[in-house]
Image (cartoon, rainbow, N blue to C red; front, side):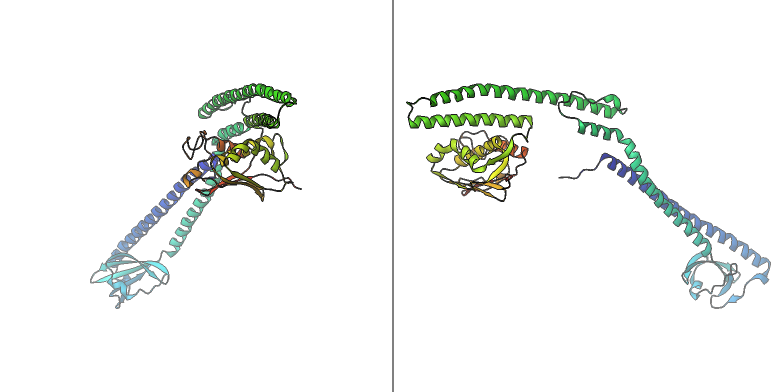
Length: 427
């Protein structure tokens, strides 16, 4: 199942990401701008100092520093620093240069003076160290603001989606058929109020539709019960006829059992329509349920020379709804019988699974994934016995309602095995 994230989480995530991106971009921009301005400031400061220094040399030649023959020029140290310049500096052009010596950056200003050059050394390491501390403080502050942004984002997102969250709780608590609709006046956001009104309209229409279905199923069940009661009564009266032969009595018992099956079928369908999945669940004999389901198919199984094998312990009992299981078994046996011209239908129960295996024609792989769909038929109607393709759909719906897992394995030309998980009653 695909994982879901709350609307609040998504709003907070988007808000946090956008804000953090803006903060980081701003911090990086400020850092870059500050570094550029720092270099401009240092360059301007050195240029002013060099212009003043050259002018003072021209006015008072005694101030000119000693001549360094290796560099071919006069070397001046700014302040109290004393740094020995490498000879490679003499290859540099006039201007301001940054060189790295001993793990630190120094600035060297070079200018022409008479027939020689003046080299002046500047050490701004203390200033640059302080500047880097300020930049690091700026980035650390940006990180703290980013954490604060995440906290604020979740708080603000909760305020933004509180009405949607409240609506979701009300909808979850609402029950289909409830007479009290949601009140749109509780919400001051137009979109949420429109959503409440749309939900109320949909809720009313669904309630009316379900009420109509319930009335329809109740009416149908009532109309079916009247003729079934007449059939049952007639069977009881005919059974008292002493002149009836054995064959007629057997047929009469079949009619009586068919009427009982119809009554159980109606009860099961009513339970499904009313969503009463836990009703009438109790321990029953699995072999007894299978034999009852096989009884209406005795003639067709004998006609097609299909042998029934029941490899199940006679004492085995399962915790199920008898009527629902009867519908499932009837549909599965009907499918197995219709698609088998001869062979065998075998019932077994292993590790909580009832397996019904036949030796029929099987189901092609491309049809196997669709067998539980309503009105889907793997073969043309004339080949499958004029069915409507809803038998296995009913089986799947009942299995889902009672939480019975169902699986189908089939090999074309060899047969089909249907596995149904049924809870066993402990001995």
